[in-house]
Image (cartoon, rainbow, N blue to C red; front, side):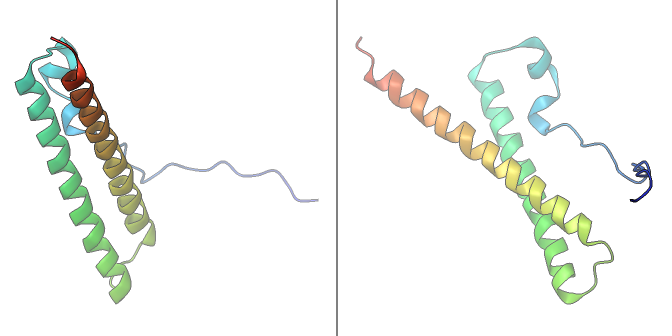
Length: 106
């Protein structure tokens, strides 16, 4: 039988940065204006584009053999994928809410 499992160290792991729409006065104050929503949505899309660009660059480095740590490429790819799923879910909910409002009787 094998011995006890050694503890895993988290050295070198950086915490995730908050998304662009999670910071600022809109998140804490609860402002429900259309301008704040549009700003948040624009920030989320810009963040998504940056994550996808980083992921693509690391993927190219992995394919060419220039990447030293494959974990960086996998983490960047997963972050871009999860952020894309979030943006698509927000878009779908927004379209659904818009359609529901348009069906309301005046």
